Image 1: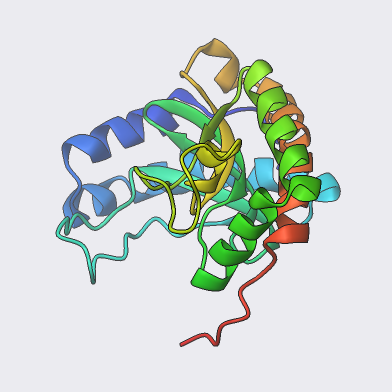
Image 2: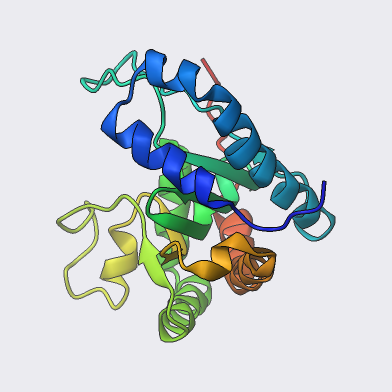
Length: 216
């Protein structure tokens, strides 16, 4: 099906799920989730694939094995176009609207080590700092998991200490559910944001790469 935007019912579904995150609520509204949320996101993913590669939709269920929060469902529907494990482009719909991002979302220790070595080295670190400045100047936010203090081995006076604190790094933008989210304009906005994030994603693919540690 052609993507025509996210209907009001998609946001209504998540408003209800936030109020009642239970198997009973989800079962009662499963058809609404499948039609208004998942089908709409799949249609968007299908139209993004020719330019960005395969876009995978995430399951609605939370992994609660190691979490104190035992609520069973995610309060958003996300989709990811991966370039390398943990590195790529992301789009999400929730009761709050849309969130679009690009970068690295999860890292193993070897990836963090390569990231910090590349940030520290002028020949690779300065271009990343310039990328970050351009993205922020364009209205995007730099986000990710980061240390509150300096990482071991680096001084507070390092010219890129802010970037060195990151364990994950991505740029993103959030949009409230204004009328345009119900139209195909969503696709154009996601495409423009993902293109803007492209140089950051490529830098990360070059310097961070996938993890070389054995998977358990």
